[in-house]
Length: 350
Image (cartoon, rainbow, N blue to C red):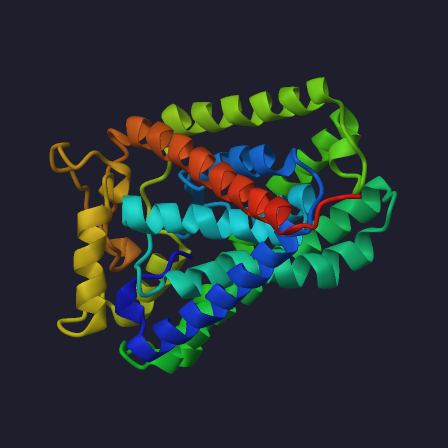
């Protein structure tokens, strides 16, 4: 659901930038009050894991579309809402600036839809209220799937509303909504299943990670960090090459409604300036090296309807590893700076 700038007006884009910036400020203030020094490296490694996981697009059978994990709910369960939101926001910023995945004008919308909704709304208001301190297997399955579906449906709904409020694309609200919600229902089922699998495994293998206020041993913490980091590098460097090249749920819905493979881009104003900035900062546009040869594109069959032409996954392994490492360093570094700033602001103990 990474929105492109072509869907948004500068007014809506700037408004959502302000909303998301407020969320980042609130999350940063809350993170400063955390007293767990292990949180910063865990945020970094889970950020890298999420970056890698989002490179894996999985096909939605019978639709000609694909989807990928958003991870906001999973990170909220593992890190808490504020740390999870800041981690997701950081991943989205790395994707937008260095990989041209999602527009810069749309970055505020993407942070709100993919980060704020699952971490700051669905997790505290739905998941945490329903899951209980020691959930049984049935409760864990039902609550996790419900929360994942709710987060995905609310995110898809916000994409439609933000696009409609912008008024720059000829996408009728009713048709756009009737395509976006069902396709993201299917994606949400996969999101819920993966979230449930990871949480269930950790509940058995490392239950201290899911218990707020518990203090895992240093050896246990290092083992968890190493495990997530190895998985992230394996996914980014190897499995990403086998990701589906079908258009994601948003691209598929836009193509079905508009009848065009892509929407016309803005030709003047703030979106053009931000687009030029993104081209300068994108080291790996579309998860490929800027020096890589032009990808080979395979048109979709006519029976599948108009669709954007996908980018070949060739060369994405090196870009994925680089992005994973960059995300780990940036997220962990930012979290450490917040923690150090908090220590400097505290009065000396007597």
